[in-house]
Image 1: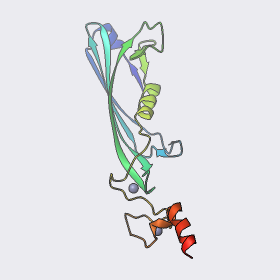
Image 2: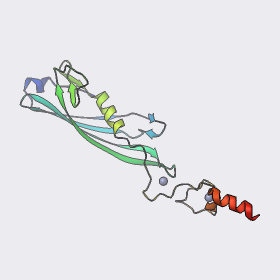
Image 3: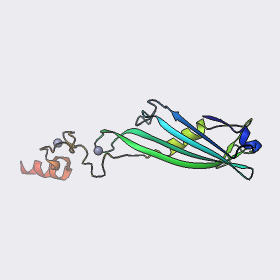
Image 4: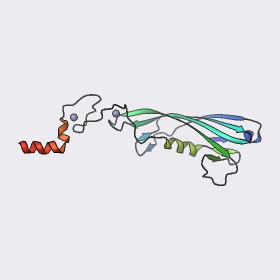
Length: 164
Ligand SMILES: [Zn+2]
Ligand SMILES: [Zn+2]
């Protein structure tokens, strides 16, 4: 996503609006997070007394697996961020300032980094998700199983051996 800021820099415009839809496709992050849904981006750039400020809103859904039952789920991801823009940036890594080159700003990288930064390490289909049975692997949200949970407790397993 590239924005031409000439009119803002000249001062003939005070504001610039732009929207784009990013498609990351089936990019997987740690083989877990899938960007299967379109990523909607709205951008506004303001010229405030000669200094340019960018406001961006990112809105999409992540396709992930529940950390307990492994079911595939879509979770909303909405991010707002703002940044100053500068034509004279000595250190390109300056925090919260994006460089303007030839009256143009390229948002590709900052958008990607911002999205990745906001992905949580784990997601759950429901905070009360019961997960999978450790013995038979059944999804306990759908059906209870008849496995005895004590089989998973090594102390009880030892006791059972003694009683034989
Ligand atoms: Zn779950
Ligand atoms: Zn079971």
